[in-house]
Image 1 (cartoon, rainbow, N blue to C red):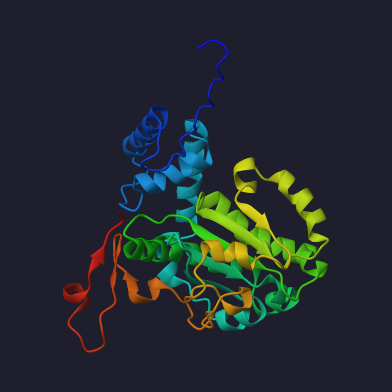
Image 2 (cartoon, one colour; image 1 turned 90 degrees about the vertical axis):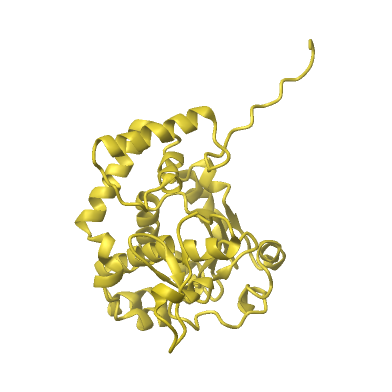
Length: 306
């Protein structure tokens, strides 16, 4: 009607169940490219997996294909398919003492929560204990556990596919010194592995107990981030508990962040539903068998990607 305002088009997210016809065609084309070029036949690369790369490159096929091929080459060069079995990060406990970072339970959406206590980071000690190369392998191993165990376990409990997580970076006890070049370099190590090879797994990030001067740093940093990523990041000073408790049950939120849970860091793999499951090959998880019980293949309930 003349004079009426045209409604803004609602953009589809590109997740399963919310895809435009163009996005569905792009997925079909991407799937066909992988098959026709014998890139991989591994069952872990299902539509959910492929869509992460498509969303990361805004469904631009040439860019998506380049990203995925680079990813597959990187996996072969670093033997990523076997990293859970062959890499032993024996300095893990020492590193956690000077750089506490654990997965810890789930938020109200069923997403795994990853927490780094950056305010307690002792960066010089980190590199007395380990090397950059071994730390990168540790990050890769952690991402693989997320993809192959933590996300599937959260999905099994939630009854729906969980493919993104919640990150909380706690700067308590730190100062602007934690934003030194060495610390920034450490953060870049993990974020580069994630952005290049495990795209679209961040649902939201909260940076809490941020020093007052941090806002100035953030003003510079956010200029290097795309709008989609910026919208997922929330910066808070000391008044953040209400925000976190809106998305995390108080029994799942650690006490030092305003919750009631006192189990943070008590399990090597982080406390969460994944503690009850184990990985099966070629893809999927199953409930761990009870000690003295029947064989896991008989007793364990298997879960494939939904």
